[in-house]
Every structure is written in structure tokens, then in C-alpha cells.
Length: 68
Image (cartoon, rainbow, N blue to C red; front, side, top):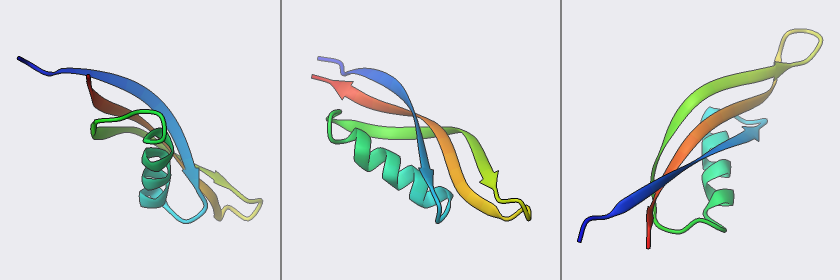
């Protein structure tokens, strides 16, 4: 039998960096979504403080998982 995959789109944030934002998002979504097989980061954004320093990293990503 062939596998069927589904994709959900999520947004996650971190004050530390891009990798932490991705890890945070995947960990959170894995609480309700099983059989995660991969993710594609679609967009990377930052928020800044008034001096132009990065205050928070944000990623938008698509997470794929195999449907039971």
C-alpha cells in the first residue's frame, strides 16, 4: 500500500534564532500531529527593537506527515 501525506502550515517564533524557531514549531506541532516526515521553511521574518537589533525570529513553514 502507498503512503498518503498531508501538509499543515504553521508559524513559530524564537528570540534565539531561526533554528530554534523551527525546533520550537516542530516540537509544538508534534504534540497533536504524528508521523511527521519533514518541513519546508517558506518565510523568515524578524521583529526589531527601536535600535534596529533583532528582537525575535519568526518562521513560516509547511510540515508534512504521513496519514494513518
